[in-house]
Length: 334
Image (cartoon, rainbow, N blue to C red; front, side, top):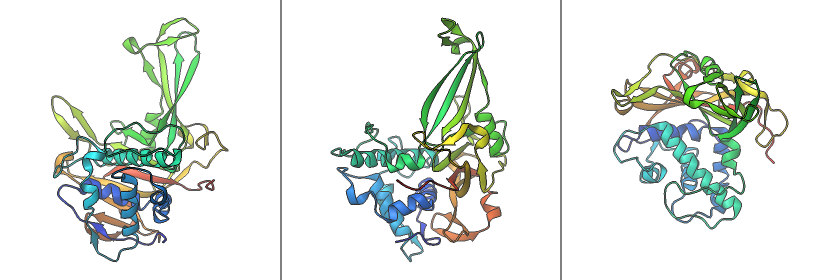
């Protein structure tokens, strides 16, 4: 099989637009779609019970091979509580939470097969094997470098942590470029947040700065439109946020972008492949849909079971919540 043009829509099975939009975005990421179309995972799956990776693989194969106008993702919808424990049927949910839960289950399933584990029964939140990285890590995994600088002696320490995408605040940003600069800007560390400086042998105030370390093959950006507080509950930032079809990460990376594991410097340019957008002023009364680039290069809008062609202008003008970028020149697979 091969990735072709826009395929079927996905039926709304009762407040499942959040799931449908995320699934269509994943199905139109060329590196992930090619893996699934080759049945890379299912041919060697060792998971006992339901496997989220096998389920997504089967759905992507059907989306790229069916002549139907729409498909009903009933199997995935029936396992939502295995993807996120607090999800309930027939209730609106967050597309980002669904995406993170699904990728976590896929990462666990892929690592078990790769590490030779015996599989795991149905469950939520089980520990993931750590003995090796999987193709899911290789696609979506990156890292952040955190640098603490002492305000007394000027010394600094760095720490690296894994990352599966970035969540960008929008309070002081009207462009993704600005949101990325805000994300990686130095911030003061004071008072109760003071940290231990070994050189000073004391707790000190200073600054903290985040930078991108390892750059992922697929970059997922969450634009934090939803805010939660005890007094007012959930609210949404509805202002327009500008983003482009091409994204350069050079300005927010720690030195040159390195491949996961510390390989040769990689290109830092990314191309937009899919957008999950949200319409409405609140999470629980709004609607998610997806805009995705087909293999022909033509954009399409996937609104549950409705699929229609869209323009590039519409793709970069949507009320975006999740942006999916693929690195322009990925390294050869080893």
